[in-house]
Image (cartoon, rainbow, N blue to C red):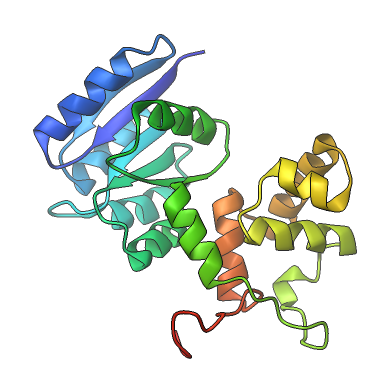
Length: 225
């Protein structure tokens, strides 16, 4: 099965470079190129690519606003963000907008290809350095005495455990090891959690955990955030 990709970046040389990389893969096809967010929206509607490889900072409409618009419109295309900037606020904004992944432009070729194949399967991807920093920043879970956010009350006790692990960025294998269950069981719980909470992917689990206060600042980056 071939994965169709739309390249969205305001620099022509960058788009050409990514096209050269992706054209080497038999199962990946670049179906179009956009130079800004507005052109990206038009071409996504016209070409319905499986994945939009999206730059963050572009003229007329940036990648975060374009992603937010695509998600709001119900687009089936997954968005994989690529940027030269690794600022926390950009990462969080991209996640909150609905992007399925966020990588830096200096990502190794093999990692980029692997990320594309993951997001097209509905999984989420964050550059390892970004994952570590974000999870380190929000790793404190409120004590049991604190009321559970209402949005999470639909989860069973076991699903809430899995939700906590997902919120910390842990993989299915890591969750299975921690809970002493099989990978298939974890996948079932993850699917149920996403369905109950109306979330697209694991990235949105992290966003929800932060926005509801389920994850709390650790204080490592200051007393307030």
